[in-house]
Length: 522
Image (cartoon, rainbow, N blue to C red; front, side, top):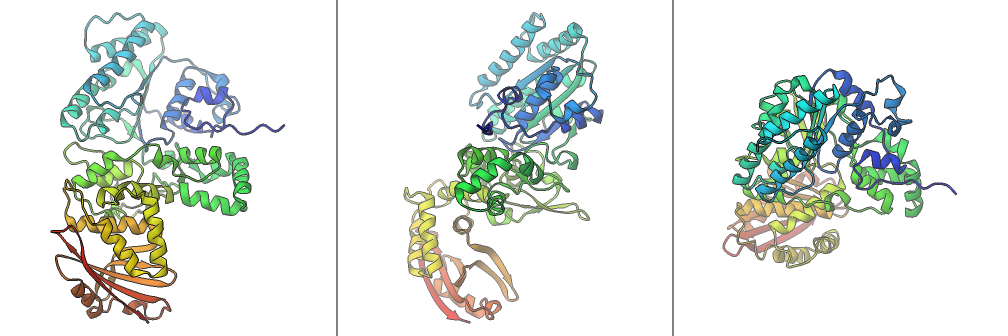
């Protein structure tokens, strides 16, 4: 009987994956790059559940000299001395850091374990001194420099961006650990940190001038995630099984995988990358779902979008420099950087001459999952499942039932949350954009014509929708503007029917006060 592929869904231990004979996408060529680089300090930023922990676990096994685990992998085909080094693996994934005490407990547990292993008596209640002592003791006892691996170094900080007191405490406490790196050069072989963000004001970066941030490096663009080449190399059996189950050919199945889970890019020259967590799950479960989105809700992101009155449409077509995408700050955690670092936006293009990145949503999973989660924060759905709401909206929109979908919109905006600290007009635009994106229609905001900008332009197989929005104005004036500025003129050569809708929102009632429409066949 043919052995079935074992997909290590949720498994972040390299040792476990290899001992259980699970599928492992060989990333050990990056070990060679890191070791031969000559550098001592490295930092890698990637979104959550993207393989950072697995890569650190692989490094841990490598520096512990566990060669048997690397049989038939790239790193075992080249000459190495396979020396054993003391490895300090500091994992911040294990807590949510709701209180200050949780970080102290995590640090205490790690330090106590190392002190016991290297016969160090904690003579002083000071994390910085104790960490320095165990570094020196490990080097002295083994004669080998220490490898320090820190997983999600910034999790306490990211989780407390809305709590200044906790943030500053965590920042100062982490400094007591990271400040040892520079003074411990003689005892350290390698320091490798992973996380979501490079906090510019944290001393680990300001104090270490020689740390190499490989987050945007072309050489390390696919250090995490699954490339198209790796998809073909390692997932053929799963793809064929899934194609048979869905009764489609392999080419169609791969196109669907690409649309749902591909599209991430982390460097100027890098190719698109699949989300590894979603890819493993779809192979294991044999059904398409929003696995990555459902594994963690973006509450922090929602709070920051609300806090800064963000124009979501502008973010989805943003152009920026690399500097705009690195680092977060307590006072002004830039929404664009936060969306990129957390995986909801990614690089789609790069203008080398100007040094400008164009960003976009990676794939359908992120688009559908993010907007389904965000929509109820911008509009009231009256306990209706967003997916059901969207499904009904699609039917009405594609059939040209203007009265039905306008009444649905009116109901949606019947009550904006009382604590919404946002510009109301911006809130309306954001909610409409998210709804249209969820519907899956071709939608553009502020669509430019020769005579002006259409607030909302939507295209279906049978219709063009031109929607003009007013706040505390008149729906008739909005419709009049569409006609006076000839917004329908660019579409006169098309056989589709043009539906023009003028909408007025009332800031007093917080909903659509009136709307009018007209249609014409151009």
